[in-house]
Image 1 (cartoon, rainbow, N blue to C red):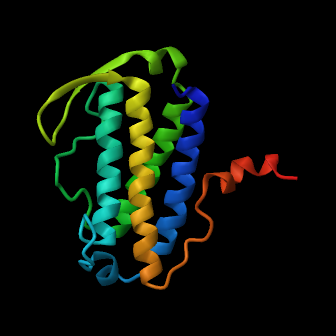
Image 2 (cartoon, one colour; image 1 turned 90 degrees about the vertical axis):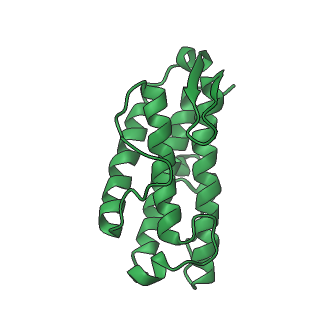
Length: 170
């Protein structure tokens, strides 16, 4: 099982990586970001939208309220600047929220209904929080591939390069 420090570290990593990737995506034209390149969510913009959608769906479930109204398959923001601003706000919220997580809460079961297959599941909260962060990493990996194909280099993306971990370097 994970603990609250894992959640804090991964929320910081998520924020750092999103800032890096959005900054790189800002160097592309809107047409380049929205071009269908055969990715699972068609484009870079579609993948960025999906990542924000996924984070908000899981935050709603974890909080037990609809903080962020979202619908499966919906484009949250067609304008890149709006999408980036909402990404920043959601990342700030994730970092603050992760600081409030307790190991006891992580150990509890969480019941939710999937928007994909409409099935209700009860799974350990720690597993679902792990999925939140794993989902982000999975799709950011797709983004780095697409960016590399467009001649953009995101630089170091591995967790040990998280700036907050620099204090452990010799």
